[in-house]
Length: 198
Image: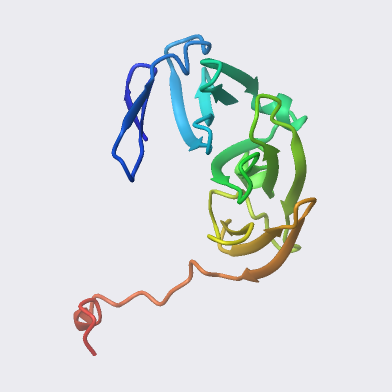
């Protein structure tokens, strides 16, 4: 998938290398400051897009069968006025996707947030999980990947990685790997450590 300029997306089938263009997916979004943050392609060729337009976040479902886009303001989907979003991930089931974000647009005051959302024009929130820590704010889920065989997500938050499972009805935290960002940096006085020697 790539942005071909303007408001056109190009979708490439990795097996056949067949290219499909979606030239009108973002025509419903007014203004010239459209920023595409993330795009998911469903099994039927439908798209779910996270976009920013004029400083506001939107989820946009594009139906290939109807050749129509259905945008919704992100705060309308979540029912929260200050939520923020950063990443999308497929679920094992085709009618579902996961969204990583934050409880507040000011990340210094925010906890990380994970949503399970229906992959359709309704974009119904099926469950949400707020990732909190007693000692410090986790800020946001800024990146995530799903296990190939299960709805287990590896979610990157401030300083940590959370491993979270979606059971079909709700989220469960399986494990937290603390301080994953921390490492002992090699000293400039020991350059041989930078080359994998020693």
